[in-house]
Length: 46
Figure 1 (cartoon, rainbow, N blue to C red):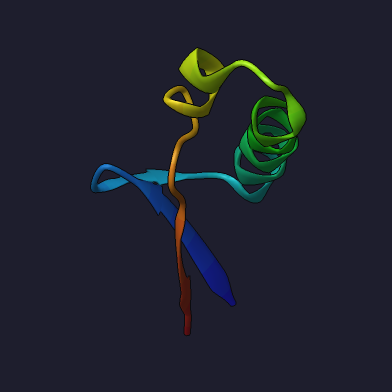
Figure 2: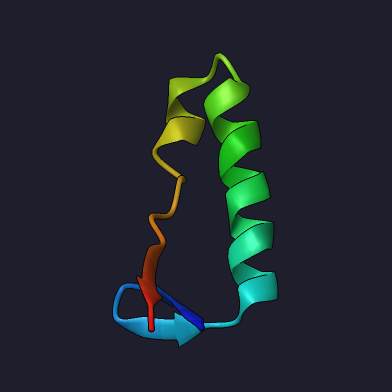
């Protein structure tokens, strides 16, 4: 079972996947200001 966290707050797997997709769009853009919007997800396997 995996648990997902952002800034110490647990989120669902669906939220994590949506955030990962948004992060991918931000990283693929040429706008550095979008890179700063990336959120880091901590995944804990249990």
